[in-house]
Length: 399
Image (tube, rainbow, N blue to C red):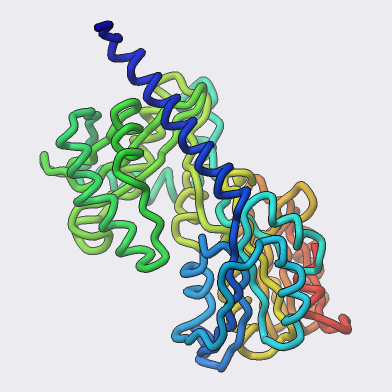
């Protein structure tokens, strides 16, 4: 019997797992099925009645419905459809419901591309390029990260250590990673299989965050060529409350420090939902994350049929990141409220992010001269006046 060195065995196991995943994906893509669901309920924030068509693979069904509805019921469903039928279903229902949404993997998303729907990657990537000096790294962070976040790390006496042992990885998965996802996303949580998390932690590293010697959080770090990926995160005892104070800043700070000291050229914060207001997106933005497309092979589509109260409530509370050709743009809707100069300043302060070509502010009211002047003086901010559009909902979706 030939005994392989541990490193070689690990590489071989990784190749075998990669091949199995690729084969699984190709087999499922070749026979991809979809469902069409007619959903009625109350819009999540306004409580206004809303009807929607969902067509898609189901990969992001809970997430999409969670954005739209506070409560809902499926009034009509059609299962085991061919994903290539997306265009027929969308065209057939676009004038029968308040909102059409679709959730399609590559390459089926091409069926709806350029058909008048807002197209968003299901996940965007956020990464930070690392210069040669630590001062250069810190200079790329937002002042809130360098100041407020780092003060929290020092105040709570947080430290880190790197471990690889099997028991620590198992406890991270069962007691931190899985509960953290369920607490944050509920039924919309996608939980990686334990073998994948264990393999990446053993091949890469499990970073534990400590307070007074007690493990309060952890993250799996995995080196990929010149990039260090922060793949999965979890906290002990829930993600809120006194125990979690400073934990998330510590995860980013120590992960960034570990990447820099390890000689990596890039810190990859991995995927975030395509919402400018999403808390995780904002945290990665504070820590210098530039936005990139291509992390997810799934695409989400949205198309409101009108600008009624329910749709406006959804759009104003969910500033989406959308594809526009080969670029990404942010879309923030102000509904029937006119855009003010302070709205322009806040959009630049809160939403503008490297990797987004522009932040577009939409309103059903024409902007005043002061708002126009403020936008002209603020690079990357664009105002879109929907009041002069015959079909404002279609204009909002337009690239």
